[in-house]
Length: 173
Image: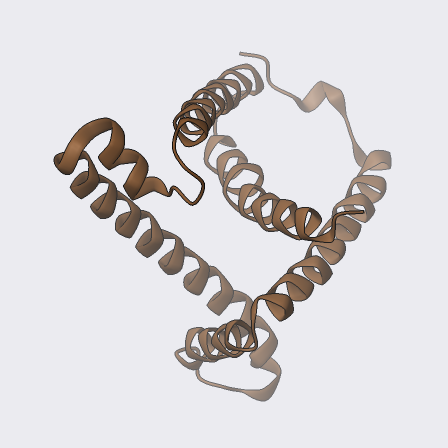
């Protein structure tokens, strides 16, 4: 088995679970089932089309191409500049979201020790920096362990929710 491929797949899967599987349903939960489902399918479709376009450009460029080099090759210097700012904006948004969410989770665990809530994001960030500084292998193994925990928790949650499901509560419009 190709363990590098597994590790890369799990990193992408973890990101998709965070953004698509948790955030989108939380935002659309105030709507009814049909409109939420349509919105989710539209988001999936747009994301898939975007990924296929990125794949097509990536396959036409030499090995090692990234978003900036793809933008420069297809859109010129202005496209590369837009690619830089877009990538930096994306990374900033992801970093802010992960530190905020991770800080909330860390605060929950630190509440037992009566730490002030402002320390939680700092402690979370320091722990993540330590993991990253230990190297890509450590990041990969940490991510694999977290994905196993996340998958196990999801399966247990789904199994425990089955007896409490009432289909008549779903709103259809």
